[in-house]
Amino acid sequence: MTEMQSVVKQNLHAETEGDVNKLINLKLNASYAYLSLGMYFDRDDVALPKFSTFFLERSMKERDQAEKLLEYQNMRGGRILLQTIALCDFLEQHFLPDSHDTIKKLGDYIGSLTRITASETHGAMGEYLFDKHTL
View 1 (cartoon, rainbow, N blue to C red):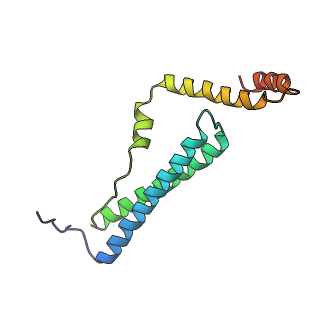
View 2 (view 1 turned 180 degrees about the horizontal axis):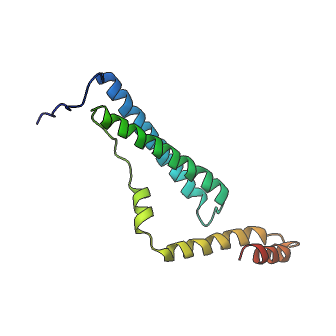
View 3 (view 1 turned 30 degrees about the vertical axis):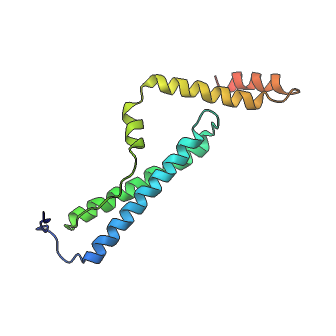
């Protein structure tokens, strides 16, 4: 089966079209890597929310840039060729019920509380401060 040429394609060299596709895939892979890091730092046994937010924001930025390039490729009449990447982001956004968020939050609290109460001399103070400022 042969692919039809776009009726709006003009002055878009095949090499340029390929380079845009490569850049799109680089941006999507970077977004996926940042997403993975963001989720790692969001785990209950790591619980570093600022690190998580940093990487999740980078993931969204890379994805937004990829979407702009996708729109550009379509506008110019180019054909989009995407590499296969996992659907974690989509599944996470649309299929995790609210109860998982509560379980995750409790797990984060346990991880944080375990770290700040580990000191025998300051454990009680850590527990008090955790209760005062977190819950």
